[in-house]
Amino acid sequence: MLRTLIVTAACISVLIAASGALRAQTDPFYREAADPVRLVIGLDMRGSNPLVEDRDYARKAGARVAGQIVDLPVRSEVIIRPLGAYNSTANDGLRMDYVVSSKNRPDVLAANVEQLIAGIPDYVQSGQLRSEGFTNILAFLENMMQVVDCSSMQSTYILVSDGVEDSEYANLRQNTAALPADVLRTTGQPCHELQILGLGRGLTSPQDTKRIRDEWRAWAQEGEGAPFSRFVGLNDW
Image (cartoon, rainbow, N blue to C red; front, side, top):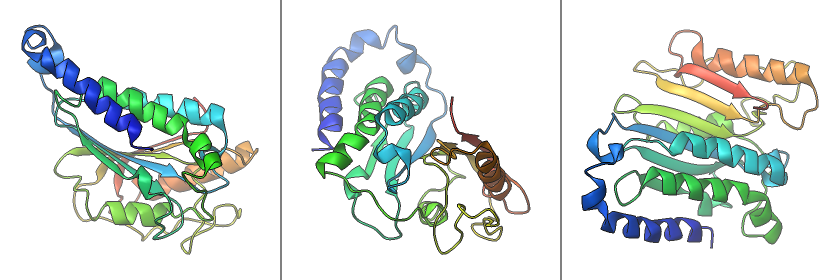
């Protein structure tokens, strides 16, 4: 049922493509294709993450993510994955891969991804998706970087998450916890950017938000072999 949104998008795209010959004369999407980019979207399904129960936050996060999809150049990639407990298959319905094309236009894809993210609290409530007990963000990034080559295309990771790593690596709910600096160091080209949307949400403490933001910034973009060139951590926007 989750895939209905994307299937609907594909049908709409076919109708749009039928008039492609005429549009190709005027539409900048066809005339001037910029270099493609890649978005890896991680949806944090831990029960304490507001995404799974806060409809207002889910709608807001969905709109933010959609805004980064809507103008993607042709041949860009959008990869959607759930994250939570390590090796969990509970929410595999959120595993989706797309390539932007004239038949899979970014504006249509953006609208459907926005609707998907906004609907996650309802999907959890209805049992179509499940909240999980842990947040393995580092392990998620490790696994994805085994299959995503950041040297082949500018790659941005967007995590809809409170950023509270809770795993064997660290538990950032503890004030003295730190992300291990030696995890996911790279000898090659770093990925473009790591974004965490909703960082510190639900903790009700600006000091905790700052502490967690500082931890992720240091881990992501500082030191030898840092895996990202940039870090953006937003509690609100």
